[in-house]
Image (cartoon, rainbow, N blue to C red; front, side, top):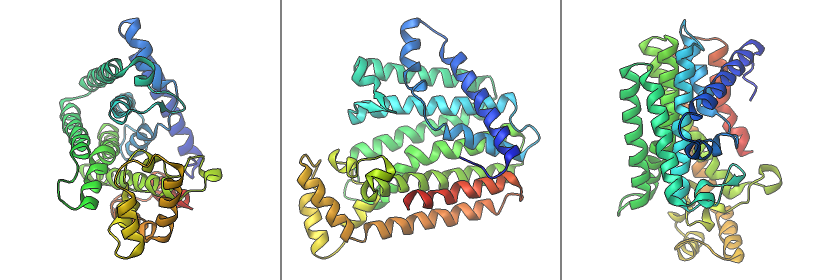
Length: 324
């Protein structure tokens, strides 16, 4: 996306190219039968959002875009890729980034092992930085696994909305938060700015995931390119759905009767989408987005004004444009 300043766009673009080059070099290490597996999703593309966040965060120190920043950014992208391999096994997904998922192509065992070797690559790169980076990665990895486990076991009688917010923070927010922290750290930013960028990354991660939830239910297929109700077909009840299920009245009652698991018929999906359109699910999910946007603004206010701060503000506000 356009970051609002030509010079900053050029710097971040150069940094992303350096990250891409490092990914190619790092992931080519090892036996041939490993390399083609770990490169599978890397070459399929992706937004490289986490490296971009790390590169932006590095702009607050004297070592912006340095070799260590590039290593940190590449490590974060490798960790993200590893989680995709494992997520696809958990979700029994057939496609990822427009290509066959690793588990669909080679089976679950190979997909899990490919994810594991990606974690090994990330750990090796981080070990070339410092122990603080390795320690933070250990905490982040623990959060990622906790989030996946939390999602698997369910709310266990607790508030399903609170449970879901914890899950998406642990599965999505923490890695974008780590991008803010490690980019700022290796860019040489102050402790105050490192903390602000860490918290900002967490808020942005939550915003992006909730917006994706809203798009899945309420988007126009011709505009979003996504088929509405994909999560419903998989039995995944995201934030707007959970808000609607908690609603009193006829709409909530029928949704609770209908959404007892994955929806297998087009008719049921269409009916669920119609009911969700009549519910307050979208409105309440957007209110949650606004809450995290307010948190993002609070953290942005801790940063010095400049092109990088303008870009981060633009990044956070861009989410509302995606909702439409």
